[in-house]
Length: 70
Image 1 (cartoon, rainbow, N blue to C red):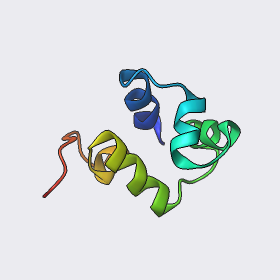
Image 2: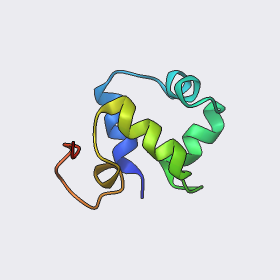
Image 3: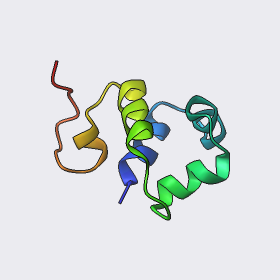
Image 4: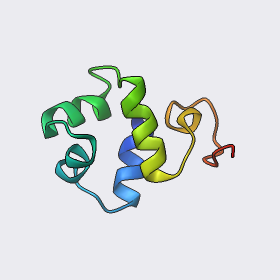
C-alpha cells in the first residue's frame, strides 16, 4: 500500500534509519510503514509529503502526479 514511500526514500538516498529520525519513530516502525504492516497516521503522512515535497495523494497512490497543490 505504501510502496511510494520506499521509492521516495530510495530516490532521496536515505536509509530507513535516517527517515525514522525525521519522523521521530523507530526504524522498525518506519519499516512497518513501508511494508504496509501498519497504517501511517495522518500527521506522519503530512510530514512525509512535506519532506519529499509531494502530495499526500501521491504517497497514497491516488494520483501519479507528485506535485502538491499550493
